[in-house]
Image (cartoon, rainbow, N blue to C red; front, top):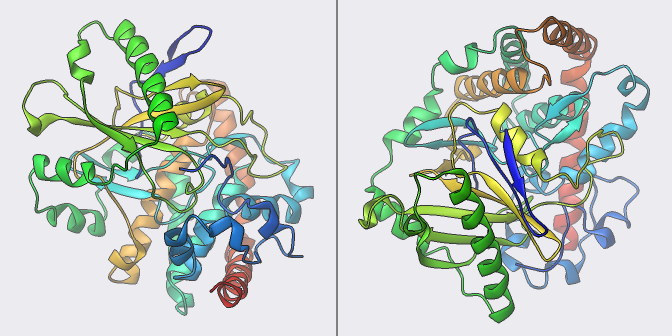
Length: 411
């Protein structure tokens, strides 16, 4: 990975970033880290509704109240702290890996040219149990009231993880899950129609927001052109830009969305770029990375990827860091209601496990140190696997109870 820097800019470009990108307020919080909500509850997974927090975001409140899974998505920070607290003794023996940080069933997307794990806002180094339990809990909340399906999916997740850990190339040759194929087959718009639809998500900015977006855009373009001499300033000619207000776990982050000219003057190959404020709060006390390091998101997208993303980078504006990525054509995030049966859930669980198993290790698989690292990670999973089903079930039950508490208190 190369990077360049100046007094006001850092940018890194990677040849192997994830399928991903993802979908304002001035508040900088991680999902579920609303202090007034979390501090009123003895259980970190039992948030108490706070009117001030959601007064400006009624749509977010509506989404969180819609289901236990949506509520779970908002709890990345409290969830991680819960796991750290519950497994304090065993965490010391666990290796350090490259975490996704917010692994769950809906962190999976399909586009015209790929499929796989997305959304690396919470990526950081830490013990692998954070990803193992986060994803396994999401399987319980997906297969709600279907214990057999949840257990089967967790076992497939572990199978996939072990396979990805042993054989990094298995991720690249893995078959596309049935639900991903069906989503892709359902794409019924042209690239230009899709671009127009995405452009409609762009919201107007006030004067201060416009200035911040322009500053981020100018610095990003300057750096990326320096590293890619085959691109021209015309590629980044602004056609539309503004705020983006979407997401659950990332709802409190500032996000900008812009449409630029792309490789030709045809509107059919315009490019959508998102500039997304990086989170500043730690997932939990047991993470081992630097949350302030802007390369943590860039590196994670590279490690977990199936395909390259050339325009990936980050910029520093007025003391705030934004990472930049391009939305792939027909980018569609998986929703749990898209899953038709337990087999489809198990397929997603297996593929998610493959990608985590491949991406978690810090060292190359071909080196002696890398092989030993994978053995240590595997041994750690051997210790945790017998209790993974029960532990994630208990976390899902607590999350559901927290959801009912929150929903009862919210209007």
